[in-house]
Length: 423
Image 1 (cartoon, rainbow, N blue to C red):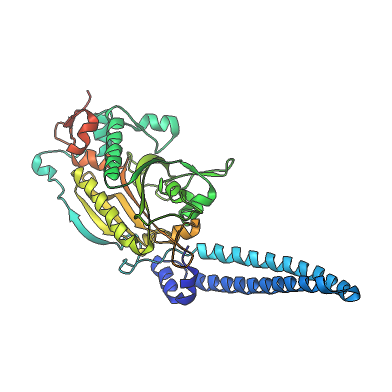
Image 2: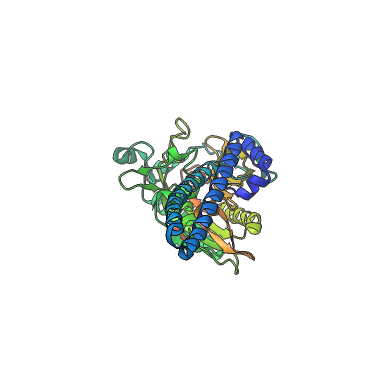
């Protein structure tokens, strides 16, 4: 949730933010009106409450008929105070509900526009010239089936479309990527964490995931619980309703979890293989930081993601995501996209978002300040996930059907340098 003080002081800034995201700027006026109604109702309640306290003192001193009259007035006022409090509470709930519908304010320099209006910041590594090498390019599923690493047919038999089994070297390869990612995160100061994959509604809502893309989240109605699509959700809720200590620097966690997504809006896109699936694993970096340090922490996350991609020897590019494709919580998001040889395009493999104080305000996560407390900033970023198998298999495929193993993964695979196809 954005800072209501900022909204009151600079409503045009928030209107511009809404426009840049492709959202309705009129919501700003609705929030301001609801906020004004809340403050007026609160002032009325406080005035009546003050009168009630004052009247109580008068009753204690009064005698006879005067006291009886004051007692009658006290009874009337008690009912009025109760009604005023209910009105103020309802107005507050309405104001908060509307304020929560506003997306975070993009950082200066974020490109405007939608999904296709990103800015390419840089390219790292060069895609292989497979034709010059005499290699007939196969997609990841064909390669994975040759290695007996991916079984989509039995995944669909057991669970339906977009489910799969990783078998043999496929399971070991995913674990290698995730363990290498967790090890790198640990070396960079993150605390390894295995997170819950079911969370309460207030946790899911607090992270901002129950907005435009709520239909992609699995909801268990009987239990009133949500399955997470990223351990970011659980890690964001880890310190909910707490005052945390950042005097020694950011609190950094690396969460490993299974993740679940309906992929409701992606019909017909990347339905072959394991690019867009309903269940996968991921290691997610998450940090709580001083608000003024959030941008620097965000850049740090990006550098760690790039370190991992370079260690996997993958050609990739970094993009600055446009405002309309940020998601409600992010003020800025950098994506790393690996080259996908079978489709000759770039495919997102990781992203990192600076959510500034947006999530922390919703989840009531604060740190001590000179006067009271202040909201902290939250930053997240993926450092390893199942989809990386796609880029790894395709970019490192060989003419004989084998797959080259980058050095960072070999300790987790018995030192093997090439994965061999299974007859």
